[in-house]
Image 1 (cartoon, rainbow, N blue to C red):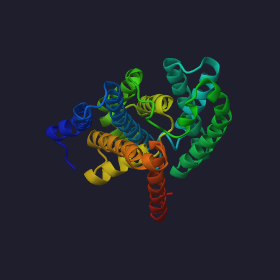
Image 2: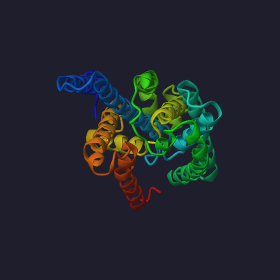
Image 3: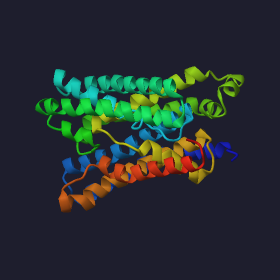
Image 4: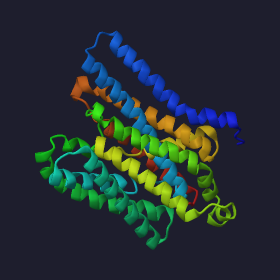
Length: 319
């Protein structure tokens, strides 16, 4: 697929256009219906956060898949989410819930879990299956530790249980700076690294011949992905599979692996997935059983998609 400058501009601007238009429409509709100022503001920020978080998680998934040349991974599979959640609970127990401190500790916990997963996977064989199995092991470890700490964390932070399954119930204005930071970090890195990630897809030797430093590119992409995903975990809890589903749908629609267009399209798809999941939880599940967290809904549909990918790659002999 040949990508010209107009196409690059369109795809790069697509997530921003979608977020701006949807949030503007949400604000107008809420205000027009005579909803109180507080409720209108809450709905506006909730919509904004689902779109920005979905975009950031999808971009992070693209980075990790391209960096490790493994289509079966995202931050959730590699243990970043569970590591960030463990750090979140530990920090809440020690210092109560302070957004800045929690975000920083979650980022460190997520990056530590990611490093452990990569080290173990490379010790095994470095194959796709090795990363998945290593990620499952690290995720199980930190998930178990998080479950133990959750009982103590609840005494300090009443919404700690919501963090186990991602929810946007706590969509308040004070979280905007952190959500925006995660979104801007991933989106800005996309403009810097997309060409370099394309080179990595062809192999380290070829990338080096093109003047790309494979180790530095992997390091920057991994830190960016892990940090942004961890910050979002500290705000809304674990949200899995968005980083796997969105990049694959993007490549399927565009019929290319060119990150210059795949990443923006994946960001748009990721934003749509989380927005629809959150809207579904409010409109459909709330009247019946109370609001089901958006993270649970995404997992219900994302897990079968992940299993389907494994089956397809197994049949092709790529596992």
